[in-house]
Image (cartoon, rainbow, N blue to C red; front, side):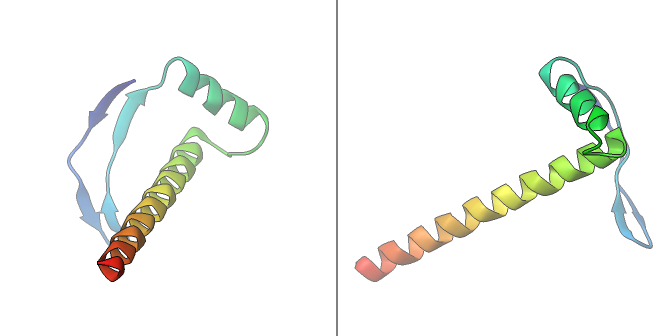
Length: 76
């Protein structure tokens, strides 16, 4: 995946980043399939949904890690 990230800017809705990219291989096939199946309305929509899902997974992992740390502290 070839990516160029431009400088982040602030606007009235918060941060804004423009990403110019070419997606190739398996991820490109996923995007084409999702759009064909009507799961996403555009490639921008697909990327935003993917980023939200990725963020949710990271938050879940962080929570599990914090819970494990708390359990270990209680056991000691």
